[in-house]
Image (cartoon, rainbow, N blue to C red):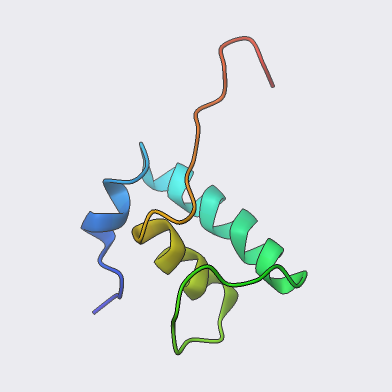
Length: 68
C-alpha cells in the first residue's frame, strides 16, 4: 500500500502527470539540500515530496495560457 494514498494525492493536483512533475521537482530540491516541510521517517526525496504534496505543504499552480 502506498503512503500517502494515490487518491488523496490526485485531489491536490489536476492529473497524474502533474503529480509526477511536482514530486520530481520537489525531490530534486530536497536532494539539493532544501529542508523537509514534513515530519517523516523516510529518507527518500520523492517519498518526502509526495508526503509534502499530500499534506498541502507543497502546492502546484497551472501555467498561464500562452506561457511556456
